[in-house]
Length: 217
Image 1 (cartoon, rainbow, N blue to C red):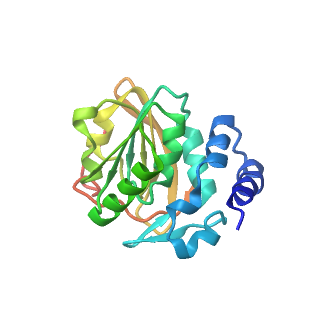
Image 2 (tube, one colour):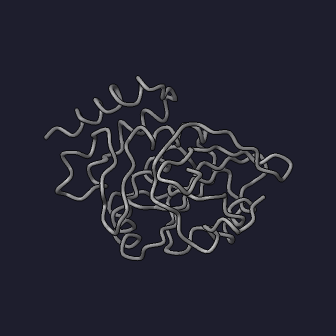
Image 3 (cartoon, rainbow, N blue to C red):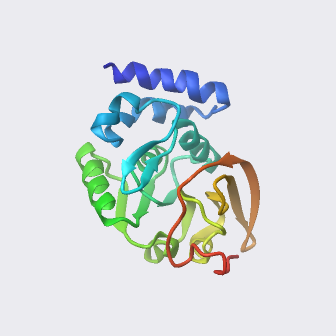
């Protein structure tokens, strides 16, 4: 199976026609070998236009959603990015091509260990990963220029709001129902100003600040 051809087709047929325009984002998707981030038995479907299971009740999002979230972050290559929900590591790998540093947190120990080994084996040098409650963020490495949450939350967790740099952006799916709203929030004068992008479907965010009754900025 020619995965290089499938990657090119993914970009040309799934991403560009839907409005993904950033050259650096498209190049990252042409480069990163998505089939290495899914279970081996699903490799033939790695570049298809739908999410796939990766074990532990988690999924790898469809390529377009990963690209959309990435493009809205507006990365220039100088940013320090915090990712909540490492999952398969595919989004992490994409971010590593577009940002200066990527800090990624995975809640599930089995998944975190497996993905960390995979990323190290491939050779990503600007990624740091830890197994922890992602809603608490990574305070000793804050502040962050960008934060991306790859699980649905009812509200933006307060620690993540506090760890976002002034002028920074946070991207996440907001909502508790089966369908959520992909949302981009920007920190201005200490407050988050949000804009809705589109409907989406993600697994729920779990952790201390994943509850509706936890305040945010």
